Image 1 (cartoon, rainbow, N blue to C red):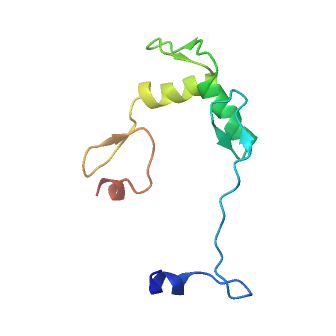
Image 2 (tube, helix red, strand yellow; image 1 turned 135 degrees about the vertical axis):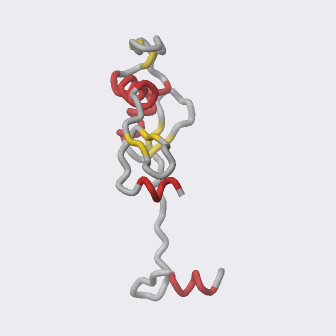
Length: 105
């Protein structure tokens, strides 16, 4: 290991390095597709996006979505106009950046 990295690692009381372990993904998708996660909310979104029939049409382009949440995200991402313009480069974004000038560099 690089000596600089080793010097910067945090140590616990016994002098051993603290290494954050990723949470165990022990919640499996009931559709047996191989998806695993560590939270029920992520499983819910996975099932909604992957295994739910898309029946809600976008009124602007007729693309189908399985939930109102995904339709709303699509409309905001694809159909909403870009509202914020950078003074330095004239790029437009759909969201406000406090430091838009830094974004353009």
